[in-house]
Length: 168
Image 1: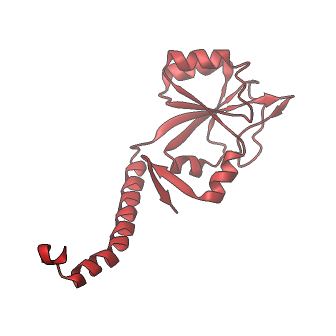
Image 2 (image 1 turned 180 degrees about the vertical axis):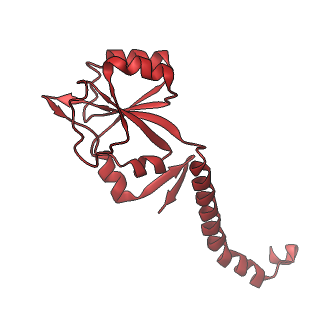
């Protein structure tokens, strides 16, 4: 093979040694470019978080706005099924708007929301009929997140950008 193509073995060995370096540099460049785009608001989806109640206690996702932002989500508000009576369990952020369930239709009509997240350990949609209908009406994706998901994501430190997994 080497005699047909006239490629020196030393050049081939150099290429094979430099290949991982170019791979890492390329991934770093892509990650930096993505962060620049996200800084300008490109690739960011507006989301609402829903606080689910079980036996009077909130089961809110102990979220981190920075973590959601790194995945391309900007938390615009928290939907509260009990007219603002719920308290956030961890890392409460004061500047995030609280939206009562009764005012959700008006909020969705006035604001561009791409996804709504419900924090729940169970796949129960009971009590969320109005929310499901609003999501269908405004073509909003409704997603369930386990409250333990954040702990897993913090431990793994894996970020996914457009299908490309970037390790940090």
